[in-house]
Image 1: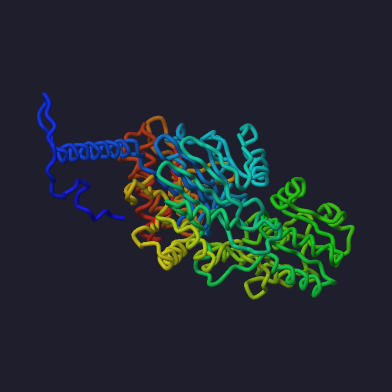
Image 2: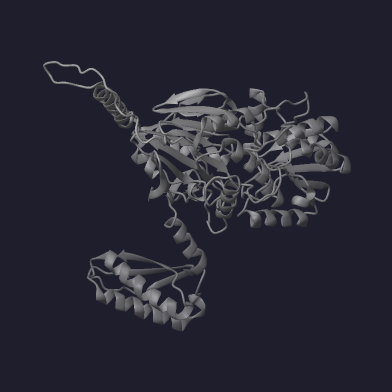
Length: 604
C-alpha cells in the first residue's frame, strides 16, 4: 500500500514556547522535533540502502538443454552464481531419417564447461527420456545423482551395463525430503505418473522458488495408492513460486486423464474374449503400474505371465526385488519354460510398443525372436499409443503382425492405453494452485508448449511472464525482470551402439548422402614418377552401374587422367581432392546430384 501523506514532519503552526539557550545556539521545540524526525528518516534510508546492498545481486538462470520442441531428451539446468543443479538426463529415440542411429542424447557442452559449479543431478523418475543419457553424462561430469529408490535401482542397472568401470554416487531421497545443494534447497514432491516413485522438484533459490513438476497427472485411484501431493503444491503456491516449468505432453487433450485403474476392465475383457488363445501384450518396459495390472488379471484368469525383452525383464525383476510389484506365487514363468504350458494359459508381456528396431515385439513380428514364434493362434495387444515421430515404425510392426496371421488390437479405439500425463483441466488446476510469477511449458513439441502457455494465460498469468523457449535458451531472472537474453549450446548428440557419436549434422549427414546418392570408389595405381599405371578402376554402389555403360566409363577415366595432371604427383591428398572434384562434376551431369566419391591411390 502506498502512503499518501506528503511528509512525516508535523506542519501544525508553532505555539509560543520557552526558548532553550546554550553555548551551541538557541532551538525551538519545533526545530528539535524536525531534527529528530529528519534523523529517523535518515536512519530508515540508511537501513533501506543496507537492505538493498545485502539483497541477492546474482541472476537466476533456467537453461533447458533438451526436452523442448520434442518428446524426450529431457535435461534442464538451474544456475545461480557458482552453483548449478541439473534436472533429468534423458534420451530420445531416433526418427526415420536418423539412419543407423540408436538414440539421441543432449549436448552437455555447457555443463562440461561449468562442471565445477554442478552440485548434483536430480532425477524425476525412471523413464528412458529422463535417465537414458546418464551412462554418457555421468562419467564426464562425475557428480552425485539424487532420486527415489526405484529410479536409482534402474540407473544403477544402466550404469553397470553401459559404463561398468564408473562408480556413480547415487543418493536416495524420499518425497517430502529437503536436501541442501550449494545455495539451493531442493524439496522432492510425490506425483502420480505411469511409473512408481515419480517426483516433482522444488528448488529454493536466493531469488525465489523454481518448481519443476516432472511428468505428472492427478489420478485419484493410482495403482500403488501414491497420489499426487496436492497439499505440497498448494503450500508452494501459498509461499510464492517464482518460476514453474511444467509437463506439456497432453496440453492438447481436453478434460482429465483417466485413471490407470480404468484399464482393469479392458484387460479382463481381453483375457475373457480370447480365453483359448495366447495373448501377447506390448507395453513400455518401465510402465510398471501396467505390469502390476496384467499380473493381477493373470492370477484371476489362471494364466501364467512370461516377460520377454531385456529391459522389460530387468525392470520387472528390480521392481519385484524392491517390493514395487507383487505377484501371486507361480504366476511369473521364465521365458525358457514357456513351452511347458498350453498357449491358452500364457500371457507374454514384451517391449516394442513404439516399433523399436531390436525390441521384443519387432523381433517377433519379423520371425527373428529366439523363443516366441507368432502365428494365427496369437492375439497381440499394443498397450501404448505411438509417441509422435514413431507412427511409421509402429505401423510397420502392425502390418507384419497381420501378415503372420495374428489378431492385433491397437489404437485409441481399442481402449488399451491410459496416459501418464495431465490433460488440460489438470494443467489448469495446477497452474491455479501454484500461481507462479513466471511460467515455462516444457516436455513437449512446440504446439504443445503453445497450448500450455495459452492455459497459463487463461488462469491469469500475464502473457509477458510466459516464456516459450527453445533448447539452449537461457532465461535470466533478476529481482524485478526476466527474459531470454543469451543461448547455450544445446544440439543433439547421436549414439550408434554404445559409442558416443558426433554432434548432429556430421555423421548423420554422411549417412543421408550415402542413402540418397550412393558411393563411387575410384582406384588408381601410380608408378614411382607419379604416372598412371593401367586404367582407373571404378566400383559404384547405389547409383550408376559402369558394367552397363562402357562409354561412361571412358569419360570418367579421362576425367581422372586430367585430375592427375593438375597436381604435384607426390601429394596424395591433393590428387584425391582433384579426382573427387572431377568425378562429382560428371556425376551431376548424369544424376543431377553428386554421390560420395572415395578415391584410393596405390603406388608401386
